[in-house]
Image (tube, rainbow, N blue to C red; front, side, top):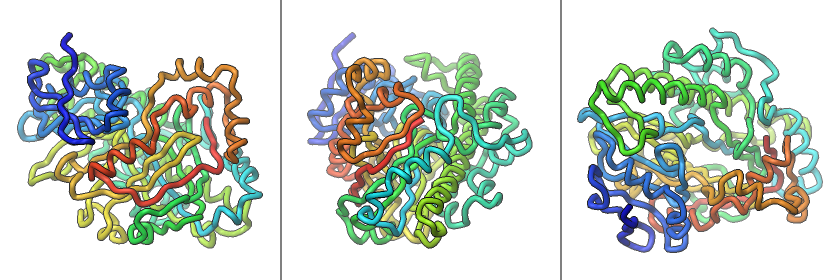
Length: 479
């Protein structure tokens, strides 16, 4: 196979030309600096960028963020938009198995210096109150009718059960509910997996993190977001659990079988896709939207448990503690969005929406500063709040990075951890960690990830999102 050509556009953009491979309909664009590009060369993710560029109906570019790494079909960190009126396709591999894995950030009125002696008690309370880990279910079980309501209504259903307030919904991407969801497009197996997992964190890279705001870069935007230096914040990272995984598994089979009838062939079978307008495409979107709504409901319920944990430890209501939702963003999703007057199906897989000021989709409070963009690091490094930009709207369909991005497989990370005590190492840096198992910690060590500071530098300097604040971890709960 020919060596991958990377044509340097500027210090933060690299082009894969259409001439690299027959069948590419658009060029690929990778956002990276020289150092990050070296790690990208080490896996097959750039090949996947080229593969995605051959999808029917793709417009603009096949895009990759600096946290790109190898994934199923699409690279993780990949973005692609297809024209719904020109035979554009939808691909389950362009969303992934963890549908609407995403992040929400909760602010507080507390300062890190106020709670320095109580972080361990707080982390213990979170670990006790929020179900986490492989196979750990929620305190209650939904019946099938309730699963259907969650799939249709998303975060709003949880709020209506008394677990939150209207403002939470308004500060969630899509107001916590993607239109077009229909649980009749979901298999009985997926419904069964959904019944016992609402309000659970899961495992892998999912986490709860108590943080301190270490630095504010943009005071105007930080003020609009309710963020200040020294403040305690909480980041929640999880998705649709087994429900979303089952939806993806089911539709990879359905879509894969349907491609031939639509005359579609792809560079990689993992890119199985069908026209958005087809019956199979509509069914997949309805099922995917159902799982996305479940994920928003899941994070809403977890936030309610987090608020309760703070109330228990600090002895006041969450309202008095100032525990307002800053925002909630999806990382793995396909959505219909208007760009340049056209309706596009935008796939973001390991990428964050980063809409500019003035977009009607934004909460009124953020209309003048842009959408909050939440970029978690790993459990031992910084996380960031950024904001969407007009340049992102022009270049990336309003998209940016989603985190640090892996540089090691989970198996390799476990091998690299041998002889180390990550819990002890993190405690020596004043970070308290609780986890269900040692293997999860080993898989998620800082050595397994790119430097999130470098990733954020690239997207900031490229202008597709801008730095607002940086947080450091105080305590982490892992599955």
